[in-house]
Image (tube, rainbow, N blue to C red):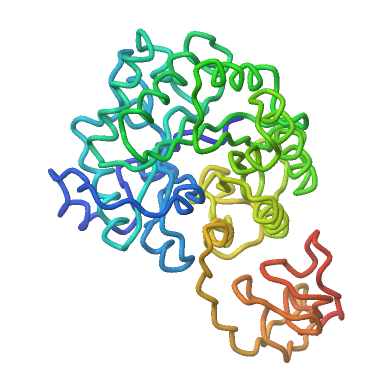
Length: 404
């Protein structure tokens, strides 16, 4: 799994595209503490790398989707070793002004952030700090620096298989939860068809032995032989059973403490997850009362144009921020609806000629059954209500009426 690579060649010196002047204004100012949002926003916060992988302007995403919170990633140990928090292993939290500026922009637009510690790459603080107390003290610096109301423990390889490191991370999470009233704590781990693997069940057992209950335990059902939403909801059901058997919870409690952390578009293992898959998982999450729905990542929530780099675009057909709208819906928001484009005069690809006399399909418009659109030089008719399902895509929503 290489989904969380640091794309330093892509705007490494730019924290948020197009916002350099604003960030200069914030230089030298820490992110000011604000009142917490309701927990549904931290439960829906999608991941966003604020310093790498060509970061978008989060306020633009907020305006387009209704999403109010983001999961900023990742806090790591310094690349050279030690027990002090850094961004991506390179930028010390203690002297940071850049990410603080991003947080101020989000809060100024009425939103907030959670911060994720760990992830796939780099060295984790649980590996380098001496014990749970030292690990918690390092993370407390991050909470204090940014006035956080939420934190995510993204526990992955190789730390995930390191018994001492996981003890440090879970112990630190419990300490932070105890010492920061109301702190929203999520724990994220790899997913398998069985829900999670042996190391994941060991993690659940450790949490139970500690008496530690986070707001949710989330699995990542991708990069492991998954194929669309049905395989993901099956994994969530299996994980639900593991939460009951390992933590002694009843069904309702297990669902309420269960989370989904997906990947939009093409995964690193060349699995594909489309808008229709996210809709299916959203329906499952809301109908079962899951405690969290998020995805990796907002940096990738746009179509590929000049590159196919999986760190900065999804490699599927989409409009910008299509997938973020699903997390906003999970939080209970109604994303702004796009305006239907004017009548298209698209020429059929390949020189087929003719013009389409119906409006072009839009990923941000909801269509009732019987609605007609044009897409890629063909006219299409919706079989039933649809939103975000590409004509000709795997959901099979649209009937192809031929070239127009």
